[in-house]
Amino acid sequence: MLTYIVLLGPPGAGKGTQSKVMANELNLPHISTGDIFRENIKNGTPLGRLADTFISKGQLVPDDVTIAMLRERFTQSDCKNGTILDGFPRTPTQADELEILLNSLGGRVNLVLFITAPVESLIERLAGRWTCKAGGHIFHESFNPPKKKGVCDIDGSELFQRDDDKAETVLNRIEIYKKQTSPLIQYYTERGLLVEINGFESIEKVSAQVMAAVQEAKNSQP
Ligand code: ADP
Ligand code: AMP
Image (cartoon, rainbow, N blue to C red; front, side, top):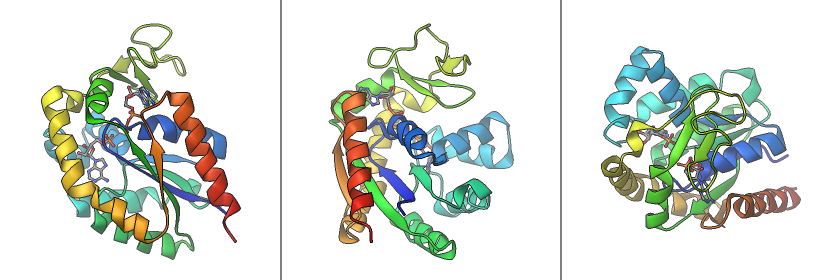
């Protein structure tokens, strides 16, 4: 059965947006390490205070901290039938650790969706991104506007703009992605798991590509 799906791609490619679509369609939990860090920052936990020192500069949170947090999330029972992993792994070390973790659960990464988009469009998307405080639902002021400005269509909570979506931090995040995360393209290509998705289309068209890739991966499983 197709269970563990990883979304890979630069910041702003549409990983969170497509994760929410897939989580609904496939009835799997959406695990976003960025969301878990932001929740910890909001609650002022020690993990949140530590993570914030890296996130505010657009840097990755160190592997040991991030891996421990993901391991902890995987102790919850909703992960046992699979998950949509959004923003994890982001380094080859994290990918190795994910393999070990899933092995111990009798699973493995079944599919990696690599979403691409041109840099100018990533910058435009992040500059206009509005995220909901309660459920992390994602909007864009031009490309996917909420019905009422500043309010989430889905749960009515307030929308906010992320501090790390400021232009100077975004450029740093894109550089960090190129240096630290893009080696995962080869990592998962070598394992025959990577499917490239053209993220430079409407949200609906990208979702159609994503769901077609999921269906094809399901069909090709023994
Ligand atoms: P990521 O999780 O990869 O950083 P998001 O899913 O949060 O990216 O999307 C970044 C921004 O771009 C959001 O404001 C979102 O509404 C918008 N967006 C996502 N996909 C598309 C798309 N295909 N076309 C236009 N805007 C998009
Ligand atoms: P995201 O919500 O996925 O855009 O992540 C926001 C920020 O959280 C990133 O820029 C990183 O600083 C941090 N972060 C999220 N996931 C990871 C990860 N897997 N490894 C390291 N840092 C992460």
